[in-house]
Image (cartoon, rainbow, N blue to C red; front, side, top):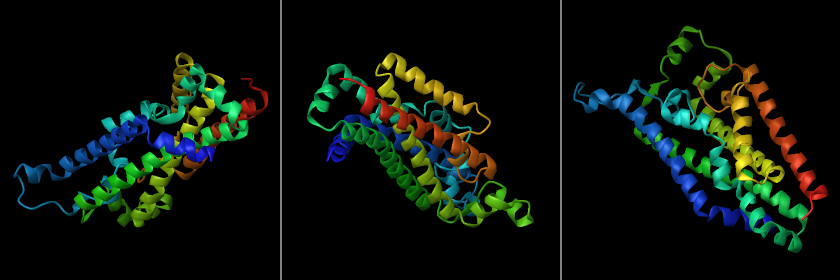
Length: 271
């Protein structure tokens, strides 16, 4: 009951709508960049026929969760301000509720375990759902605009020569399955970080401390030898070892912080 209330309230909030529209804008701009890159010569009248086949990006490669946007503005925004998205969507809401006394009143009426677990679950579900919908929409549009495209910007040639093997070869042979899996993984990663952010707010319910801490943790992870972004983009050159280790690091960080926050708020924290 508590989870349903929290989730529906968050989904109806203006913040969630802004987050959704912003993410739609980022993914749409990235798709537009791929469109101008592929159709530029045709639109300028340099060539008479629309590009297709090997002259046009495969729909999976043209979509947002792929290596095609690495190094461009959308990818930069996603990399360096990533924590801002789950924080803004819902995860930092505990701060204002704590400051205005709403949280304390809530605990007098509801079971403490239910309140804490519902807040953590909602912090995961809001960014997960919003990003999932935005990425599926982006993928659907890419399949319309880039219909008939087969190019992965060189790797498919290497595949024919036998220079690509293992996970990279599997991804190129089954691009749609690969991309759908990466949509799920990308959504899980941002959802888990939303839960991590919510857990941190239980320890430091002050904006002036919360945001620097969250960004410091994220930037620190970006400087590790194994980055979580290795599992968030399809058709890249990351090896299996890097993807597995980065996933373990990331999952442990989120789970340990979340469990610690839950125990702290349920057993030790006072009103």
